[in-house]
Amino acid sequence: MQERIDNRGRTRWRRFAAMMVPATAAAGAILFGMSSGAIASNITVSGQTFKVGASRLEGDGFKQYGGIVNEKNGRVHPVAVSEISRAELYNLCQSVRADLPGMPVVLTINAGDGDKPATAKDMLIAMDSLAGNAEFTNIKIGRDASDLNPSARTGSFGQNAEHVTITNLEQVSRYTTAATFNLTGLKLKVNVGDDAKGKECF
Image 1 (cartoon, rainbow, N blue to C red):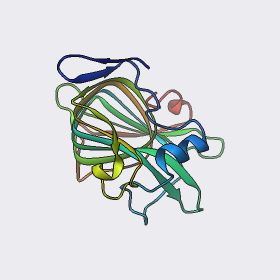
Image 2: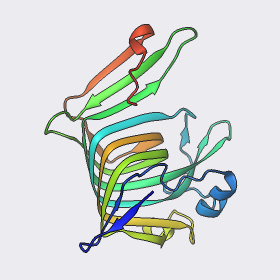
Image 3: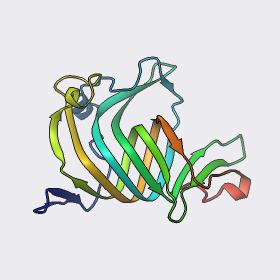
């Protein structure tokens, strides 16, 4: 991962892959403290990931820190938690595998084509990985996560930026919430059997 800071106070990362997600449980314990972030303790996730892709994301009020999500069976997943106050997503794609025995099934949602992006306010994302090309405006790396969100663990790692632009976004997520989420030009389709092949976002 290469980093470049120009005289406008911006940080550009050529490759923004698996951001702050630990490679091992030990690394996760050090980096995240295995604490719950801003995700309510009574929220349980399905245990199944879903993919989100976009040609471009424009986000104001970016924050990121570590957290965990829980399945009903007690299984725990360390995640990177990202908050964005206001987001625009161009050519948004969301896909999830929902296979039946002997039958591939992929649910896809598309929105925000052309110059009318999908928009979201107060978005929170719990993710396993993120890839793309990112540019941050006035980024601050190494902040105490609890200063970014009081429910994050005191002393754990956090970062924030006034604005983030990510192109060629590819994200694997476990949970997303938003105060409002406007899907302009929404298209939902259940792809079954041969039609399901190659229909995931990436």
